[in-house]
Image (cartoon, rainbow, N blue to C red; front, side):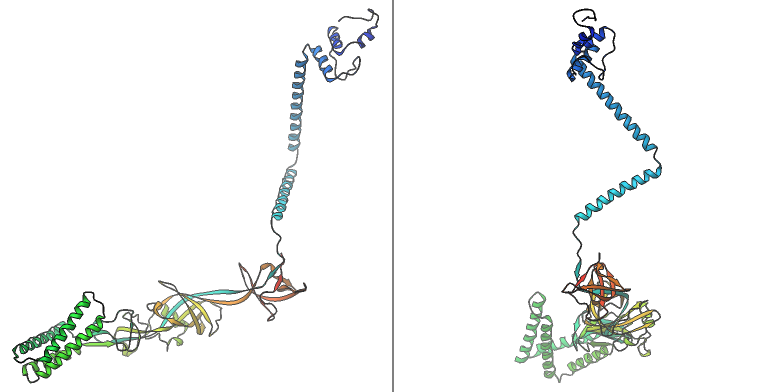
Length: 492
């Protein structure tokens, strides 16, 4: 489009004013003018965004769509440049900060995070209780040491013991009069028993010849022989598994044999040869009996053929007299001296009372004072642990050691073969237990604050016995001032 101020009915200004934005932008481009800027006054009414884009496109020789895409790209580039500039300014600002400022900022961040976490955790937790109930509990204290067992037992010994034939079973119960063993003295030889058996064989053979030579029928002898044979068959049946008591059956058999022998002696009492054989048998038995001693139980008790050399020294009559030093020596293996009359004798067996025994217990460096007559739990540690009730008979403290003399009412079987061992003595005391938060100090005195029924508070002074994981064990200074079941205040 061409135009100047001299052509047409309009002046140049009017002509330009009547142009559209596109025409104006084209006119400026054709006449060498720079493109119109956004803030530049334009002819005609104000332009819309579409008109402005069309004018810019006309100036740059683009279509409207290309102009809009170009503008979007330019705006994106400008925004990216502005972001980079802001980031660069922040980095420069951070680099210019002092180390102290950075540390304070970090501490502030950590503090804020910690405060938020504390608020969250405390918000999740349930409110802490403000009161508690006084409870009753047993407080246990354990004292460890060395123990020496004292049994009610008697040792039987003899001189010149060559051999022992055990009859009773080890550790079994025996009654008064039960044969427990046979003791063979020095000088005894098995040849003596061979000689005795030879005499008995001669008697048997001669008796058989006398019976064979008889012509008259002897009804009593026949009955006695049949009786011995029948009792012998009954013993054999028991051996092969029949039910019954072998001990009783053997006694019945022996009684039948003795009865037959007595009748045989009386029937042939005038036979000189048989009488001489009987005399030889009796003399040999007497000779053997001088070397073999039958030992029987003198009371109902437990039989044991094992001894350790302490039996004569550790008895119910003597154990109360020993000092801590003497007991320590025995625990260490030092055996007491034996009486002169007992020296050279061989221990054969011991009889032990079934019930009741005693313990000598040594505790090093102990300031504990036991109560005589009180009962405590005693644990004896050996091959198998044994726990019993032990009563304090008496105690002695000397040279840094506490010696307790304890009595145990119970079965002696668990300690039948025990002499020394490690032991633990436990005492249990009933006490009041309160939470740790219940302890309150008033005028340098520890106590608890009791909540009365009307809501009022009363300070109760207490003595702290022990602090355990389950609470604080206390006792009121004034008896009865604090009892189980009462309500107390907590101080968190």
